[in-house]
Length: 264
Image (cartoon, rainbow, N blue to C red; front, side, top):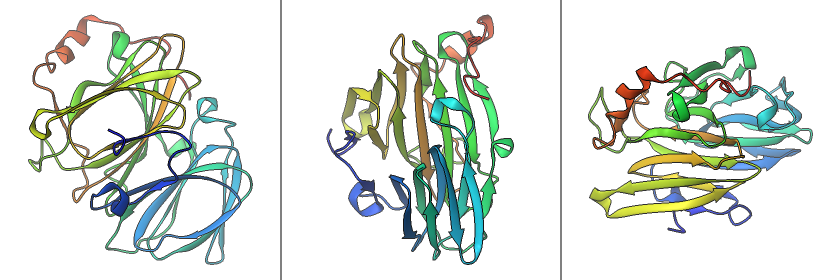
């Protein structure tokens, strides 16, 4: 269990080597700092504060929200083999994936982020699409999710661990949680003899190498999580747990939660 659920202040970064998978990396840092992307393409997602990013004579200003519940994200995509400097005291998530092609930097402002209201009833949540499958990247995909207190998210439980396109593709994934309270996370895979149900709190990180997964926000506490994903296909296709797939049809008789979107 400890290999998949990393507690706040007990982890520094995740790499393909530490996670025992092929592509995905994740870290959270507070500026100022300098770094190299090396073999990874990355997306810098500002969690809170403002910063300036300098790359090879170019400069971008990012940020604006005080914290993740304060507004829409600013992000910057940087290609592999790139040196960069982050100036300012912003808290920045570094989502990375091994890349074969060196592409161009892309600034992703709040107006570029697509908001999706997904689900209905007490399974309504907000998806902010930051790096979508259509984005010119090799493997990296990034979304952030806002779940109102008491609601279910990533529901019905779904998985993406078998290469059966177009209905399902293989994706490694991380969940980075922010909340003033707590939530419940389940990750299970009969095929891998895994059934993990844990309380998650602010700053915890879940690794999802395989299996169905779903999340529930505790009553009284809104939940944020940032998902980084990576695979060999530009797709986020997944399949529902067949025992719970029926719930999608029931949403037609429910109203979406009026609290969503939580931020805009």
